[in-house]
Length: 423
Image (cartoon, rainbow, N blue to C red):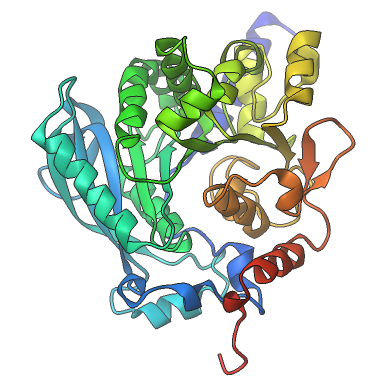
């Protein structure tokens, strides 16, 4: 092979992955998690009447530039300041009632995704280094949503690249809906919509790590019982480094003190575009100190991370090669009781909705989405979430009959969720 032809193949491969990885779509709901389609379980029975609505709030931090035309509410370019706000999202068709939304769970929500739209956004003000009235108003608004929901925990999400503000917001409103109307907060950093933005936006996003760090600290001032963190694709290194920063700022605190101070429960990394060695050696110790449970979802079939690993010359957390790790790093991950690796490679069903093959499993696949949902509700260890040991230390799998097991476990704990025959 000549040097010229070899270079051409590399360029072609890069273009192939970047044109498809994290590709954009019109705003739509996530497919219904499999547990919501189970014939014996009805989560909606436990909802209060004021939560039986198609409208959901999503709170946000963003340093995107505001879209004065109102088309996307915020653009893909950087604004002059980091702001705090609330997006009001409608789920489903414009004329749907809550009963229509509930019934839609029983359909084919993957091949026929349900629409959603951001109706309006309200800014509370700039997020500065000083405590302000805007911060207080933002916290009060989040607390009001926590008071309304039976789920007193809060979820915070950092997205990957090549995603619109409205797209990510509607997606997270879907999660809020399935979490019983719980408080959902996003950090939305500016990223372009072209395939080549992967090469620029993900590295540039590292300058937002201090802002993500401050965001997590601010959320610890809410009345949330616990705070659950979720990071996707190249949003994962931003979250990991932010948590490392928090630990570094409090070297005198041990695990118990950090948990009491920040109340971080689950930290979940899905399809994570993080250097495996850096994560295991530099970031895991701090994350484990801060969290009650750390979940890493990974797949050997993640096409986006396959090419990302080739470009970086090192395997990624979301598609790991353990040969990249030192014996000390392997021992730390294999033996720590608060670390869980979840291999989703062989879970049947969809693993993407557009984008690169195998990269969007955490919301496209009903079974995997069910476990992510559980992790955003409660820091249960994997053996209590119906996962099965793989034979490798701290690596877990989805067994046959997984959803039935989850349904039985839920109904044993909360018989009130039993679906009524007349329904």
